[in-house]
Length: 281
Image 1: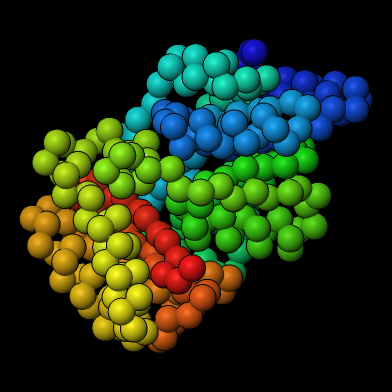
Image 2: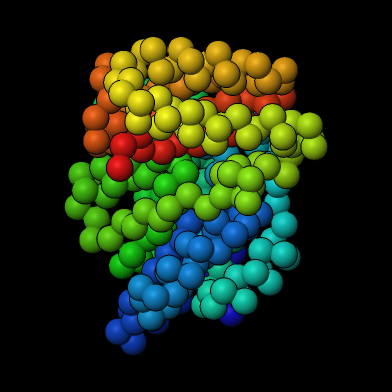
């Protein structure tokens, strides 16, 4: 395994692989790998001849006052984990390589980016779509694997891939959780011990919502009100959003059905965490 930091060098590697008839699977990440990322790599190892891991903390998807500078980074440890996971190549460019002086082209997906994180983080998905499209162009994967924890991101990337006729199979993988239910996230390391305990309110809210639905409650507004009340008992919690949406359109729903997904974003101190889950089935 090697690490490439240059776009040109990465393209040369890809060209050689394609000339040799190899298929490529890409797992795009911002690094600071955890077991959730490793589960994506495990799946990726099964789906192509060559497995590429990209590590890039993308500045264009962070808004003013967000945690770009504080986002955890450890390329050395990531490289060790990637080697053990069977990665063939790491692509780890810096910001200047991906966005050189004079850079002026961005990708926007309309509609499903206006709700949820798109509403609370203006410009976020513009940055996500731009960097993912660039990675797709550079690495030319046959398959790209993402985690379902970023539910809206996965939906947006699928829409972009379809709309731009990109010949890439987009695979979503289940949320990987800690033993106590907290969804694994690179940002979890920024939580204090106390706030780490408070953050369990997210997975507990999912369980509470499913219990309410199982008991016959189908009013989305009433369920959300109860969840807000529960999460607000945590002293350091600041709710960004709690919404119940259709899994495909991401439009808000009034009544629960098989397509209903509960999506949550909550700050615990300065650390923003997300989680989601279906409410039926």
